[in-house]
Length: 470
Image 1: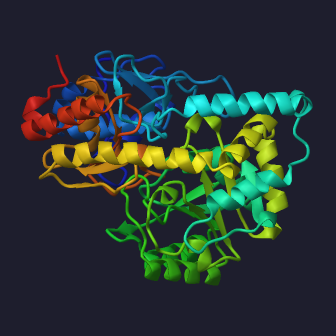
Image 2: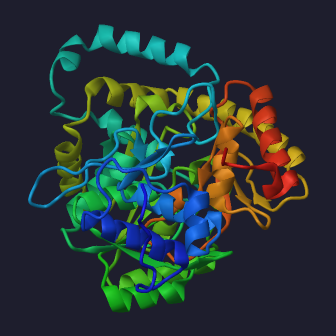
């Protein structure tokens, strides 16, 4: 497009955010038409006197808002809109946040943390076959009654350290994400605030936004959530719920101390805030810190599942909640998902109760640790967080790298990673200059070595080794 420049004289926040806001305004006003190609990042940076990285971050924000789509080498284009009174954006079916849903072929998938393939397929095949033979009627019908063994499996899988949930507080679910969303839908109403850290598993905040919940952000430091800022948010926003990952938080791997967990529980009790404790990665660790629920059992919901330690494709998960919440959450889960398939729920319960899930987790951990060891050796000397047993790395980028630019550089070298914007729960002025990459999805350890080698070379060469423009 030609003869267009953004108005950056108004607004607040960093330049990249004001640039994104200005472009969004001009799209709303019709000054930038659907299908129009935005200026190349280098050209727009020159015209407004900014850095290419600033423009890149603005374009990433626009993609996250669903306003544009972009492909490396093709450009960034404004998406069309539905012709409705609410003027809703027509989302690009291939873009969700800053991550491509369908990864480009031939790329190494370092953007996933699903359990590595250690031979689960053969075990799952055998269990499914026996289940189909023994329960043909249940498979041919909708699931209306949940057998006791499904709740027992949830109790077993969610138990960690001294935490032992009761069967009357268990809700079997279609994975951890569905479990958390069911709790949000059941226990909050449209317009309610939910507290998130600036960096977290942002798919929950985005999903909550789709059903009308609002996001309130709480600050964190090197030790995790700041309890004093949580209290400030509670006093100002009056949130109904907070979502957090106290152990091995995604993406930074920070684990909250017992002191902070106790302080968070105190604030939540004082302001009547429900806590959702996502223990999906904590379940992989050997961390002995008591779960958050032990400090506030009357208001804490623990969510966990099989995706990171057994197999993501079986969609197995459970919630442990105060018994008073159980019925509402179970109904909400059915309304949101259409119901729990007997075949998957039975598969998950058999894997857990037979001990096969625990054996799979052990094999996954062995493979994960072998791959994390490759990362530690290859990236020695750089600033990154890694934990034993946990399948991702948080890399703090050296100057002058920016998160989005580094992600694009890796992509052009055949490696898919996630920049920090993928994990931002809302619009945030905080900049972390970090990226996350997983080590569990590439098929072979040799692929891990090759992909991390690309990351190392880019770090060594700096921006001089990457040119995104032809």
